[in-house]
Length: 516
Image (cartoon, rainbow, N blue to C red; front, side, top):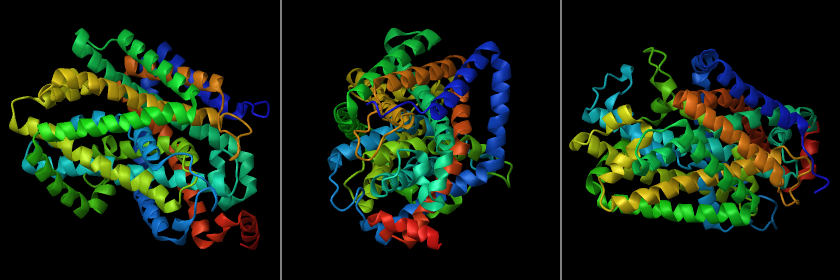
């Protein structure tokens, strides 16, 4: 391990910015919130067009690459052996990207769109049109586009790291385009990406703590307090640090496989006992509307009608996915050795997106059915008791709920642990010097513990004292720099599309650069 050491330029800036944010929020909460709020509004107002266009562009890139000659290239070279079996690889991808977000939001989010559709859409709240709008919006937010935002940078990193033998750094994604001189800025690029990710990660850990605390409240009664949130965050952090310490093959892979099977079982059960025919009918009809209006919905910024809805929803989501993308790329790219580019795009984009579509049909369909056709006011639960209680209220209406709610809690817990585990793994690697495609890619325990604790602290402060809005702001502030890095990195794909042979014979790639 002696050749591996801390990269101070990557580690310290992010560490101090986050520490500063925590202290500032403690010293003067209102001033801190006002400042973060202004920054946040400025990002959304000035760049919503870029988030919308960028996310659609990445989906287009994925399709182009899939059908191009690059599609046949094997990650790591012709003789590379896979790190993971296809099922384990798929379950890790599914659990680390989707995590609990999809569990949490597929029941709560459709209620918002159904009961308060965009002001510029002229839809009546609670109408059948609003219901179709709601369901088709879920497909937009949770299926193909988010996975493209993850898969494309992950593929660029995998090919740079394994085929071109570049360093374990986000700047390696830019090197095929800018040449070796980009190395000078690698510390800065990695530090920006690290900040984006830690902000995004704290926000999702915050959401996770809320979901789990909501579940704990079902048993203990009472409200969600900072103390309860603190205990939940501490338990999540301890578990994922232990899991990250046991390494990829043991910790992350086992937890993810278990999680994927549990999710599958939960989905099938809910589908059978829920309003099956209603969900299928609504799902198919809404999927048609989603495909029909895909371009319009993807590029809806709300500017003409002065409508804030896209900034609260679609663009907020694109910002979150982008905040996670650069560092998620390191992790997803790292585990993809030995598979072809086409297999990579199927496992990282197509299959998880289809899984999410089925999940939306089941859970969003059930939530909309209960809101529209029964007297269980889920929307009222959402507004009065908070997002974290919608899922549990819904499950109480299904048979075997006494058995289901603990299972749900367990899935939520495992999902968070797997996602956080893979991200601390990547963060640790980013802050460590001397990792190559041939090393064991393990940054050591201290680094994972340090980042685990930092992320846990930031998440706890944010959720306990600032609430879910603070969490959203953190994500947006990380999303913009990450968006810039990811969009510029796609230039490397264009270089490879022009010269696919540079991926199979790296030595030639430099001569191309000189020639061009």
